[in-house]
Figure (tube, helix red, strand yellow):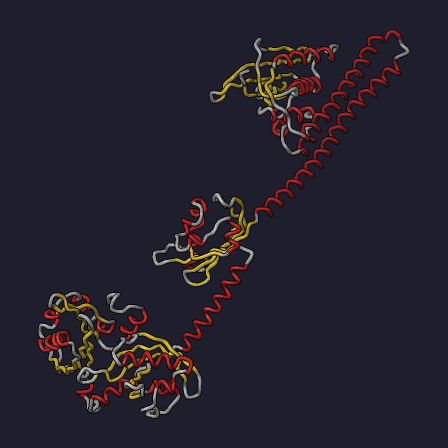
Length: 624
């Protein structure tokens, strides 16, 4: 049915609820065309009437010209026609009887209501008159049917009407409707409108709601559909109305509205953000509203997005991850919880804790809180605990290393002192005294280096290094000369393959500590005679980038493969157990990392770790 014929959904529902087939015809260029039909007409024809929509009445009634004649008379003369029609069909043995009600509707429409009266014609129990049949229909209808004369007096009221008003049948005929059943507060106003309708000054409102008062004094709300009653000469003789008691419906709607208002107030005053969504027939998720907390948390007003798809509300990256979950919840129910959701959209950059669940079929809400500060506080606590733990582990580490190494030094000094004391009376043993004094001197030097290394480790742990371009070659040469001087009495050979040109890397003066600890480590753990150390420096390329490679090769006792993996491990317990390492290599590893370099260990002779080790370092070269 076209929109301009029934102007609202309630009128259309009433039209479709009529239990008889009803057709609407429209006159266009002197041709009557099928303009519409109700659901009963559709069902009784098994949908075939739809194929005739827009076709001429001549085609529709080609076998029933008398019906076509009544149809044209109705619209041309602008009159109502009631005609009982007998239709014979080859399909059925007995004829079928119908009453056709033709009614003119300004300016160019005719409604045709078709009532099958075959039952009344063919059975003994059929009613004997039009009035009895009308009364049967009126009294079995589940709606109020009320007819008033031009003074507003009741001339017809069906059983449903008496039941709603609380009176016995026929008790109210002749009573004035407005004086008896309309509240005083608006009785005069409603009666004035009625009189204007009766006088023809205005047309009746097809749909209208108003209060009535029952016999017990109770107020009820009735929804009316109103029409004018005409006499034989087309004069207005009253009105006829069908009414539905919507008191309970209105009460339910009011309670629902109150409940919704309370819910809205609760939502609006919640300290957590709320976004609401609806799922449409196409499966799209539509944004339907938010509260002030949501706007405050996310830093913008979401009212302008009401009616938009979800992809217009949240960022693309987030939508791709969550949109399908949102749609699944809106469609099928359930809920899902995202404890830590990183959200970035230019207005809010932080972390949300979200709970998402269905509120009713195809509706859902998303509740969220800003937990950015909480997450930051948790991270600070974790970092603080980690720092305290690291500080404790380092203190334990330094204590164990220092205790072990200083005990070795003191033991060597004690041994040298005891031997010297026992042999000092023999002047022929002066060469041996030199050896013992040299041993003591070396151990004192080891003690100095140990104390310095402890201090270095402490400094490396406490603050960041200043990094700048430094030259590698000259500091190495100076350190080799110093080591030779300290251990001049040892049988030691240090060979070098060093470029004559300067090579620069990003670092600082701690490069000296790398050289010192690597060279000292090769001497400390070397029992061979002579001690051999070879230092090689050369340039190399790694993925087209320039690097410098340093190799410190010795003939000391070597390191098994399983120990090689532990030497530069981060776990301090492992480091403590690897006695070759001492504090020196811990310093080397830290400094190399700060210089953006790498360090590892290989066998001097591949596959035979007992023949010595090769400590290898690489650093990116910079152009100075």
